[in-house]
Length: 101
Image (cartoon, rainbow, N blue to C red; front, side, top):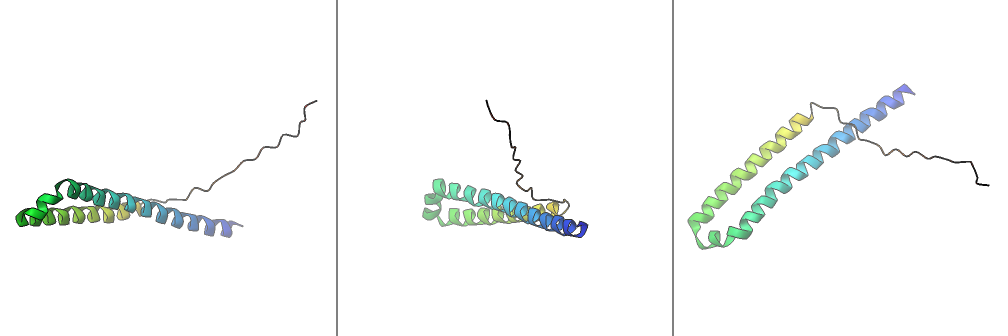
């Protein structure tokens, strides 16, 4: 029975780690892309009208994405220092055998 519990715990740790990492990555990516999208929304026409501004924006965009990807790698490395176990749903049922008179 202990062997099964060990295997199950290892599996839950791997699943928990993978799910948490995926969640973190998605949040960081959404922040990066969403921020760039907002910037393009409000200033995009300036970039279209002026090649120099367009080039500067592309340079800034590249730096933002590089920094975000660097943080993604740091997050993955940091998370490897922890044991993450997926929390299972736990249900408790209570039975009341008393009847009212």
